[in-house]
Amino acid sequence: MKRLMMALILGFTLPAGGTFADEGTPSAEGTELYIISPKDGESLKSPVTVRFGLKGMGVAPAGVEKEGTGHHHLIIDTDLPPFDENIPMDEQHIHFGGGQTETTIELSPGKHTLQLLLGDQNHIPHSPPVTSKKITITVVE
Image 1: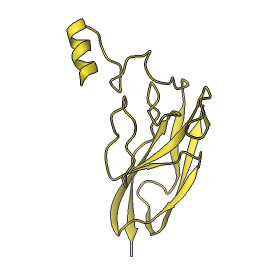
Image 2: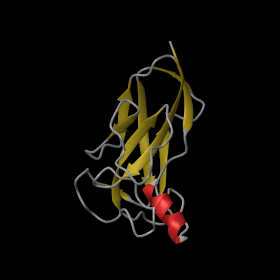
Image 3: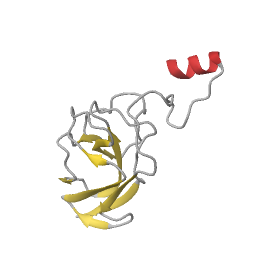
């Protein structure tokens, strides 16, 4: 919010994601982050295995500062967090700081949304942010 206020006062325009271009770890142009499986609209039983896909950048563990890399965060049943802050760590924001590219999660029966967000070595989204499409799955008993 402070950045938005300062931008308005000084007459700047903020890019998508609400951060200035010179802030944050840069992402590579054309990077694609996606969920390989499950597929959008799929119905399946829990536990659910989620496989992550990334093109245009590499995967490195949290704490490792290497240009053109980041690590995955799985966002479950909520919207993306602010792009200029550390990604929360809770049941809806799962961190894969070891560089993992898949996980198996327990989900209750019903509809759920899944989305990926790439974070830098400090768990902050890149600039511009690298996100997957949000998918919806149904967990059946």
